Length: 406
Image (cartoon, rainbow, N blue to C red; front, side):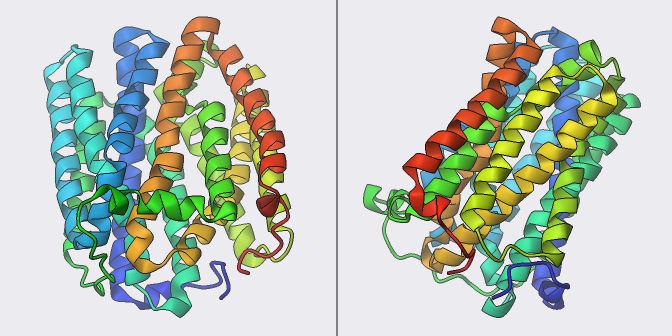
C-alpha cells in the first residue's frame, strides 16, 4: 500500500467526498471559532490564564469521556454519532453568537458554551477517525488517510486567517460564520451512506472500555509515536499565547492573529504535498525524532522573536515538522488497528494527541502567568527537546523503525 496523496483515488467514492467536504468545512469553523474565542476572552480579561482555561474547558470532556466515546464509536453507527455531535456544536456556536450579539461580558457563560462544544468534540473525534476505513476500499485507505490529514491542515490555513478577518468586522460576524458552517457540515454528513463497520459486541464494561489502552500498550511502536507526540505538543504548544503575541509583543491586531494561527498549517500543507511526491520509504523512526526535535527548536526561536516575519517563519517550520509526526502516527494507528477496535483506539489517540493541544494551551497559560509569555514558550521548546532525547532511549523499536508499513 502506498501511503501518499499520489492522486485523488479516495475521491472516486461519493461517501468519502461528502465526508472530506464535511471535515474541511467543520475544521475551518473550529479554527474560526478558536481565533474568535481567544481574542474575545483576552479582550475581556487581559489574563493569560483565561486563555489557558479555554483550552482546559475543551480538554476536560475529551479525557473524561474518551473511553465512553471510543466504545460508542465501535458499538453505534459512526455517522449517527457525528450527526448528533455537530448538532451540539451548531447549538453551542449559536449560543456564542447570541452572547457576542448581546454584548455579554460574563466569561463564565462563554466557558459553559465552550464546554458543550468540548463534549461534542469528545464524541466526534473517535467516530471521525474510525469512519474513514468504512468509506473506501482497503486499497484506497492510504490515500484516504493522507487526504483526511490534509483537510484539517488546509482548514488551519484558511480558518485562522478568515477568523481574524471576520472578527475585524465584529465578534457576531465570526460566530455567525461558525454557526452556518456547522449547519452545512450536518447537511453533508446526512448524505453519507457508508458501509457499516464491523461492530464490537462487548457490553459496556471496564474490560471493553480499556481495550483501546491495552491494544496501544501492546504495540511499542504505536505507543512510542503517540506518547512522543503527546508530550511534544503538551510542552511545545504556543498557540494559546498567540493573542498575547499579536496584541502585546508584535502589535498586529486580530488580522495578524489569524495570520499567525495560519502559518503552522501553511508549513504542514506544503510538507504534506512534499510527502506526496517523496513518500517516506526508509528510516521512518529517525525521521520522526528529527521532526519533533525541529518542532522544539522552532518553538524556542518563535518564543524569542519580536519580529513578525521571523515569527511567521518559525511557525511555518514548526507546522512542517509537526506534519511529519502527524503523518507517521496516523498511518501507524489506522493500518495496525483492526476495525472493531478503531473507535476505542482512536479515542485514546484523541486524548493523547488532539486533547493534548488544549491541555498544552492550559499549561502555557499557567506558565505565562507565572513567568511571562516569551519565557513560557521558550521553556516549552526546551522541554520538547528533552522529551526527544528520553524517548530515543525508552522506545528503541520506534527509533529503529525503518519502513512505515512493515
